[in-house]
Image (cartoon, rainbow, N blue to C red; front, side, top):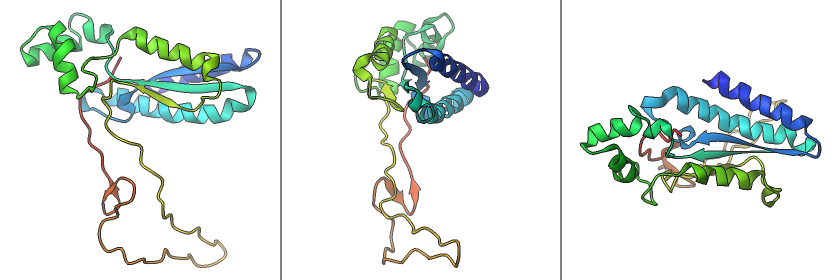
Length: 206
């Protein structure tokens, strides 16, 4: 799955470079790139790799006038969910309800979707159209969430007190001890150097 995602994105980038006057690429990712879930390990890993590739390509092809962005969606009303035997049926069986009620109530509640509903497919398409339009002419390298507020995490801030660069010609210059005995409280560091974040909900697969 990872290799398939990589090849398709590189192929799109190659065709974009051929286009005259620049181009725009929108990759479809998922919040599973940030919120890995045990039931879709391969999918989550592939989308995490796509997030990294998206950023790299935006830097590589910017001189040729090519913009590269991605959309990270939460659950979207597509056949993955709605088809017979799909994820809605599985959720309904666990919740003791119908597939429709599972999509409308159980899934948004269980996954902590702030807006109280899953995303519609046309909403993802509308966002993609915006990202390739002239209105987004100075947007590149971004990952735009459309998940109804499901993802509750923030990106970690850069270390506000980075260690000094090592002088390769001599011994390293150790980081001075500034008397901080307990856990660091800068950014999102919650316990002595380990960054943690809540992971809620299930797959955001579209």
